[in-house]
Image (cartoon, rainbow, N blue to C red):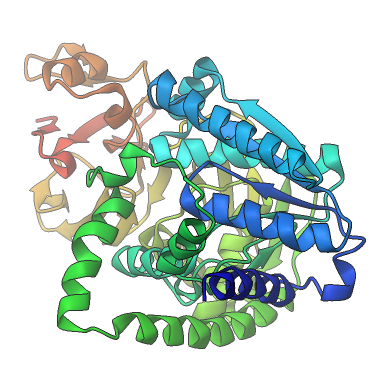
Length: 455
């Protein structure tokens, strides 16, 4: 029975390789790598791939990354563990090429500050940069990653709670470019059984038990609760993943058929063609256009929906900004282009021509044209007329006080104790009709502060 556990596991991994597009006959000439952290998942993948490739007289290329986030004894300890394991495999007759990369703390902190998407996302971004270098350096056909069936279920639950669409609810892809995941059909308990059978230890990352991390919270708190009430929920999720893949593949094929005009720093579509598309396709075409212009930040659904509404209004010709891109809505075309100036991740700029509801990062702005003037979110803004700007804060901004003197908007933010990142997210309302445009309102209420309205 013990040998059967080993055989069955390695057979499942080989089937996983087949499903990812590597036929058994190709194993003898494909160059295959594996990313190994030292955790149970990646260690099981390392050992099983070593066995499979040895039978095919092939070298296995191993990459481990020191993220330099946790204490040195832990993060460097992971590297030493993987290195020693690879040396042990070499001594046992396996052909292993061990490689290690270290993310220096300065680079990590710079990216953390630039991306503003948290530690986990920054680590992932830098990790994949190293993976790309490794793939190119070793001329790999495939790099194997150790995501398993449990990871798949956690990921789909997380995306569901974030309001994911059918693409994101299709789960982790088995194959994306050179990246493949042979363990996606294998449960965590099978992985641990395999390693125990081989008397193989693995490293445990203490942060995996910190429920302040979103994924850990889902795994340790939410999933046990759901499983207690619905014991077979995981099978339902996996079935849903397959259904979503079918829908997602069809939608992607429709998006790929949409004709886009591509230039070096911009991408356009004829307005008439865009208007004839189904809304589901419109959304994905816009996201594809943003991605073409290297806009890889998550784009809020509210922003996309507002963009579509603006495009569908034939009377509106305007320019909008999102992060490092500009969107030009013209009479006959829609263009997304890389902005010539560097703006923050939370930069926005809009011209409001009429009353309505407008959606941004921070939420909605409701504009109403009343008898007494224009009101924004039920606040009457003195002497404001259409059109006017809604934009983010700029360092040189000044605003009038009740005694008719000027005050720097930055000083108001200091008074409100608003941190630097949030300053860029608080909307400024500026009139543009007069010869000398003036700020009429700071909408601090969107983040729980006061609104500063010029009287």
